[in-house]
Image 1 (cartoon, helix red, strand yellow):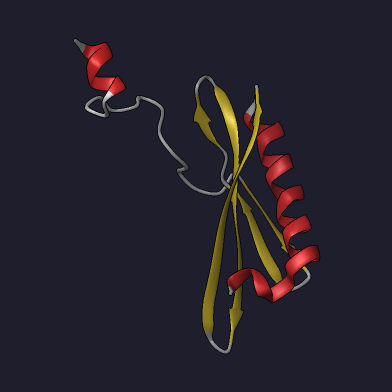
Image 2 (cartoon, rainbow, N blue to C red):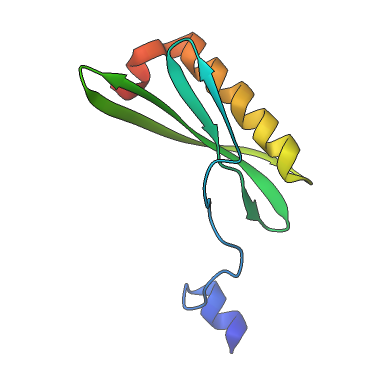
Length: 95
């Protein structure tokens, strides 16, 4: 019966989502926070990009399909992806 619950959304995942930043980096006036989480036995790349603009804190959350066997590698990749987002989009990421 538990198989059917999980299949149709009745069961809860035992692997929690992001709990807080694993690592943070101040980059070109933005703050990147790596928040990898465990998914399917691996670490999912996840993070946030924030910046205070006109006194208001803007936040962009990103999740990528990349998965790693350890949390450190996933955090490193999230920081790299955050830098790439900032380099490509700048403040437009909040639009």
